[in-house]
Length: 191
Image (cartoon, rainbow, N blue to C red; front, side, top):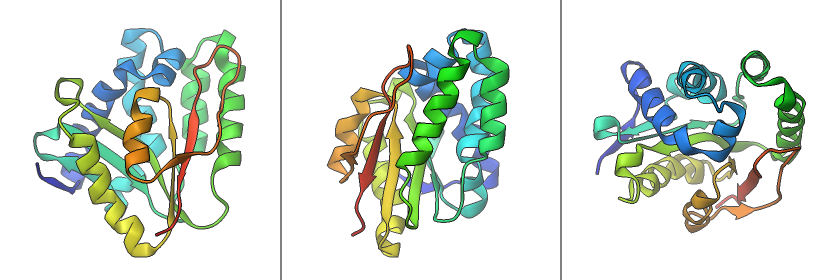
């Protein structure tokens, strides 16, 4: 399986596979339960959450777009203003306040020191279980380890925790508000 740095021309394919992968994600579907709204809005959320990885050379895809991952290097942040706007405009009134609380708590878990951040990694459900997620993680962590820095992520799907743990991440807390699923911040210490 070949993992490569995503080019600008790969953005649509990468966002497409991430949209497929997160279709069954507890947090994604709690916040966007309507299928039509999810399909329309999730690509925009993906761009706001980690789209700057494409311009930084820190987005990775597999051949055939069976998987993709977006990493943000130190000093590069998600477009929080767009994320908040997208969720405010597209989530139901009864969870909007919980979404704001979740975003606030996410910010408190991010390491204060320079670190790499993984906003998204996903594999097309048809290809899950074939080692694609691990291959993507291995390739991206080369840059993290080259820099000798920590890496941080939030896992919104408990099924993914073992993958992250195999790559050195440890759960450092839980984030939950109202009826939301539990989001688990995870840290991989510098190596």
